[in-house]
Amino acid sequence: QSILRGLAMDLLDGAHDTAQLRRAWDSLEPTERAIPELAIHAAQRLSLLGGDVALARAWLLPVWEQWGQLGDLARGRLVRALESGLSQIDGAWLARIEAAHQAQPRDALLQYLAGMACLQRQLWGKAQQMLAQAAQGLQDTGLHRNAWRALAELAERRGEPEAAQQAYRRAAAP
Image (cartoon, rainbow, N blue to C red):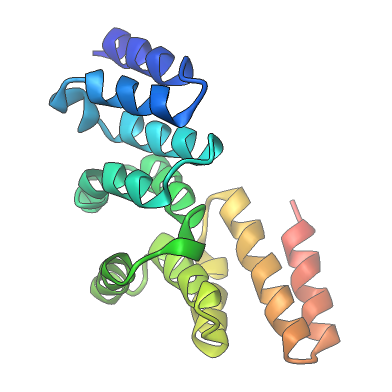
């Protein structure tokens, strides 16, 4: 299994443009495309190559639907992959994120993703609330920093320089 996964990763990494990556993805067996690690990697590679964000989300949908069965590392990687395309997110994905967050309101990764989606939609108050909650519980260092950085920017937007500076300090803390 891990040898096949490694070969599939190499195939995806060998793609130097979006057309090659799509061909590589399409050449994988459906069971391989269903492996969360591969789907996330393919979506991130597509994003890196400047590919279609909607296509990347389509590749991620089967992984998203397994949220409850994923480990923390895979869930964090999925959140990162989805976050990279939040500026172009559609209503269906917003509804999925919101429904997942409502079903698991204490899940820091879902709070973070929902908060960042609200930030993209310029729903400042809702974004601030969700990101503040997420920042308290996020175990992923990079996402934790991103949450505090976003909170700092929101504080600047509200004209609260002390709160912004405190949030920037939290973002920079180890």
